[in-house]
Length: 436
Image (cartoon, rainbow, N blue to C red; front, side, top):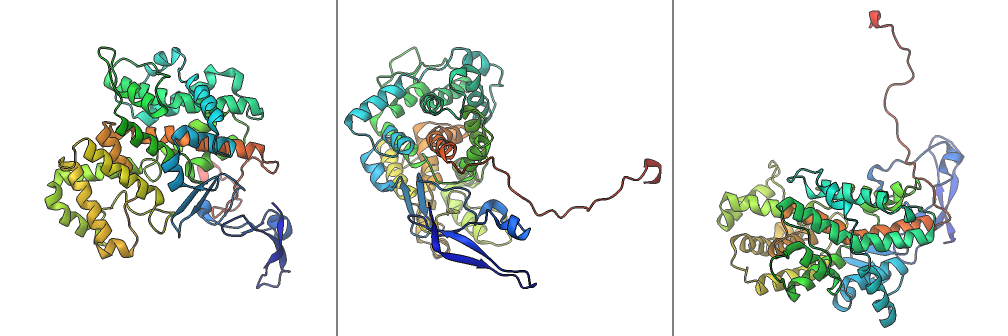
């Protein structure tokens, strides 16, 4: 990364001297103005709530063009990855920078498979939670607890520690999510089956029981693998930024990922697919497809508090490229499982049709997003709504780790320390209590 010959000049209307700021050009995307010396030169900070106009790092992992509806993993369009790769190929790409060749693919799949089991003590740790605890509350605890079991890989500054932690987290997240589910429904835990695919193993751990054989449906297996791929990374979103900020203190990788899990729990982030399904269930309770017109009118009413969940995206100002891919998978799963006539899914497809044709939504580019379709697919598969965000966390773990590793390897990285615009009381003296 080297500065451009062009400089950005910052001038002040109060007569203060102007300053030149370096300008950096990325390989693609907007240029950035380097303000690292701004305070030293001017005594001023920038003000950017939510960091919406601030580049907090340089990265080579994921690129999003929200206007074009483009998502690239290490330069590869998500559409090509979804058609030609599986989730573990995508993990290799995000972690190491390239798609694996045949030998690397075989070795990487075996490496992940060899780390799918978790310490038996995790079963006793789970018993401390109420049976009706939210799965994300359980996952935050379980992922953080991994650091107590793997003392040999908690040095974030050691590349070997980071690599084995990455493999352990990718391999064990499906096991932990399935354990959280089995605990909530009172069924025995199912051990991983390393002869199955990554997605197939997760499905088996979720839905198999010891009392009979269970065969993984290949259509469901492909659908879940695609959900994992499409959610693997998404640039500097809230949870990824949380992982980076947490990791910048030098904490261990398991703690940093646990922080990402906690952030993802929010309904404005990872909980969006859960919110979309809850919305559909609310409409169903109101009267289903027959009342959808009333619901749409409420959404359009500026004075109404009713919100349309699962439509539009903060970053994509066009159609979310992941949603296009997930839409194909959604219709494939509903057809294969014979659920097109199920009242809830029929309602979802009616809502989808309205949103894609109604000028109110089209003009505002409120297209169905990936959360809308992935929620429907997970519900059709049999994953309970409360577990949706945990599945998202499972998929996003590899992205968090890749971003964390990149930050630690960056010679410019420092512990995160945002600034503030203070608007509280100035210095004042404490008045004796009798005089207050």
